[in-house]
Length: 355
Image 1 (cartoon, one colour):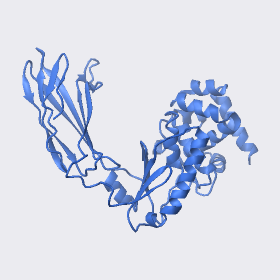
Image 2 (tube, one colour; image 1 turned 90 degrees about the vertical axis):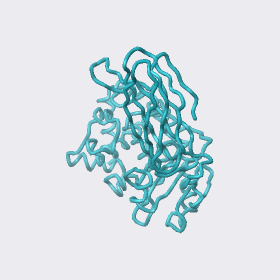
Image 3 (cartoon, rainbow, N blue to C red; image 1 turned 60 degrees about the vertical axis):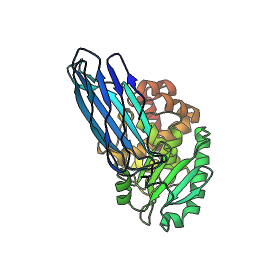
Image 4 (tube, one colour; image 1 turned 180 degrees about the vertical axis):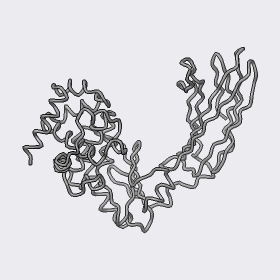
């Protein structure tokens, strides 16, 4: 039972999460409309099992009658539970000032831990093989290929972490949690995430089998670079691919140009008429969706970052990471001291001389 919460207009009490278990759970707070007006209240429940497990999120809308107390009924679902599981509860009042109903900032936003000590926990990691390194907590299924290769994986990842952290100038005192699934379907079923790789927070989730072995540096680069900022995708993805290439990986193996360096891929694509101007590339807030033409944008982003580091150094790139958001050409121009068209011209000229 969570503590009561009160504002000038509403009182939320007896915030009962129910008997939390795997499956459907009942959430039944008591709310009091303290005003003389009819209020619309939105409840958002996010059931997060913890770790990398599939989350569930539901929203509910209620009408609160003037000066009345009501018990709200809502359901949330946990498919799994780990000791890290929590229920995130948010209450909103819709913002209708513009004539378009939308959610304003929540006036109540709390995470309620429900996993620690819960007898229904079914995912405590004890069923997995674990190897701890200087920078990673590595988990995999016993007798899987990742289990067989775990010593080599551990040494490779730790070495890459050291080099990436050194280049970026970050000195983390925490460890990345790295989990390997044996196939993409199991990963999708357990996490809800499509694809062979996924990084979030301080976690990396990858598929590892005879056919699929991802670049060992790309996701680590994302996690460490996040300490510098959240820049435009051209810098964020470009840096991850560039660092992978720098450390000896086939960085474009899964990105449309296996066996080629980023510069080679850009030169080849451009010769065939496939090119994205730097200003447009900078406008992307992600790279990977079909609209961003990833087979072109990934190598271009990498090549741009390689050029910027080679011409202006790491300090400038670190500065760009903290200030250059998607579409913010002026910030890029200020850091590198030239119009974006001139930066693009210098980059392409450098490519031509590198042939």
